[in-house]
Every structure is written in structure tokens, then in C-alpha cells.
Amino acid sequence: MTKIALIAGSPSNGSRLFGLVGYAADRLALAGFDVDLISAADLPAEDLLRADFGSAAIRQALASVEQADAVIIASPVFKASYSGALKTILDLLPQKGFQGKVVLPLFIGGTIAHLLAVDYALKPVVAALGGTNILGGVFAVDGWITRTEHGGYELTEQLKERLDAAIGDLVHELEQYAAASDRNKQGQAV
Image: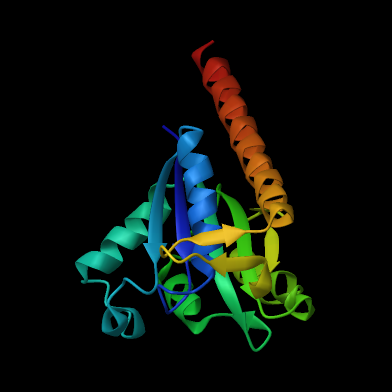
């Protein structure tokens, strides 16, 4: 089964970011993918800040990324960049931690003015970690996601359409990788 690591870089579980994260995870699970959520808010803060590689939670998070075929990187935008909580997770990854993986960014910010945070803040770091297949991703504005009275999130139809398109791109890339891998295996068997 194809594995996807979904890194949520919000320091708070109440962030609207989890509207994006939940929507993407649900769609991918329905499509038969194994999605593993790595939430900065759920990792031990001291272990993250001290880069404690002996921590069971940190080891498990790193193993999830290592075993994944694709990584979704989700973050709120603060001061024109991704969150510091996300940065602490990215700093723990090995130098080629994203090599051979499809990467899909999902960002959320207060205004569309922060749209370029993906290109100028995240993509160079992903490339430094060996990522070469970085999809366009989705940037959402806070106002496009509302909290429901039952603790869930409601996304605008336009945002759902954009997320569906981005998830479709991710699935297509994973299918291309799988087909290329199958061709390589057949070529080696001959």
C-alpha cells in the first residue's frame, strides 16, 4: 500500500490548518492510501526543540517520513514563512529525507498576500532535503475555513475543488512513480 506522511506544522490542534489536513487525509484514505499524520502539536515540545533522537515519538515521526512515498507538508503562515513548529520537524530529517518522494504543500494564512511563502520559504528547504518533485500545492485563506459547532471544519466549495485538484495531482504523480518502478523491475528481470 502506498504510504503518505502528512506533516502538520501548527503548534495548536485548534488551528484551521486541520480543516485542510483533515480534508486531505480523508480523501486520500478513501482512495486507499495509508496516511500517517505527524502533528507538531502532538509531539513532545522539549523533544522537538532539543532534537532528541532518542525520543520514541520523534523516532516514530521520522520513520513515517522515511517509509512514505509522498509527504504532505501543511503549515500556517506566520510572518511570511511557515511555522517554527514545522521548522523543528524539518530540522530533524536527514539530509536527503525527501529524496524520491512526491511533496505536496498545503498552507494557510490570514491573507492571500502570504501566498509566496510556499515558493520562497518552503521549497528551498524541501530541495535542500533532496526533494525534487514538489507539487504546486494549495494556499488557503483563514476565512475559507470555518469551525463547526461540533468541533469540525467547513471548507468553501472553491477550496474543496482546489484541494481535490491538488490531491489528484499527488495521486497522478504516485501512479507515475509506481509505473516507472514496475518498468524498472521488469527490465531488471529480463
